[in-house]
Image (cartoon, rainbow, N blue to C red; front, side):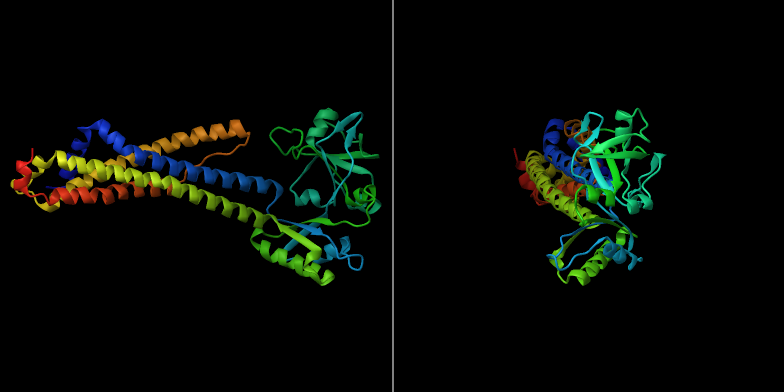
Length: 398
């Protein structure tokens, strides 16, 4: 008997008891679906994390200089010298000073608006562009000018889409708007990157009453060189302080990698848990195949009496188990896609997060392959039992 004939016979036997076959496949369907959805959720989380970090820049180092008492300190020039001394890894630098006090436009208080002192190169470092007026320039830094660049949200909400030449207050100090940033978000809103004010860092430091600046943003030439860039800054600061506790350097690339590794670990654990249902499904297939062998004992006896070999009987039952499991895997893949789409909608609605649950071809292939392998593995024992039946005993079976 050819393989094709055995395959057709297996399909016929499966169709003869549709409900039992469906219940047998249910464990496989749920297991494959769960694996696909969980892996898709992990991919969605990684993509969302990567996009979020891309918005703030993965090619940046955040440097916080805490200093070492009053005997040793690093000023702005020291940090600029460190960057200039390592052009192969370090590209640009901007001090960062958070302004104290609320932003006010007239009598309106912008409670969620961030006001930050930066250098004239910060816009370029962050891939920001100016749509109206101009950005900050070196003269603003050197002369500590009371000027600012505002985000689109502030421009649209408080200055009717303009703002250049207008004034606002940060704390007790007045600033003249010299530029408006291009829109960064689909909808400029309160608390987003479009709701911001940038002033010269020298002006911000004076407004805060501070003579030292402790926070810096440094861009690196390539995110692949994040480790080398971080070490270059560490070496430069260590030469100044001779104390590794006097500063802290945060690499956005390293944080992203750590978060992705953590997501991978969580998804792997959840996938293993979901895979248990595949094992349960395999046990169900073995159980139902044992029942099928018992029910078809006389049929097996007749076939063996007519000359069917043990290998043919064994192959038939193994193929029948594999087909049952494979069909369950196909149904599980279809369900996995449907549930993934539903999960995408639910996550977006409930968490207000644009995250897409994305099943991968690799996960689908592995899930289907495992489901088919489980059918073969758990179907082998009943198949061997059927193949070893004594034809005389089988023919006498009632």
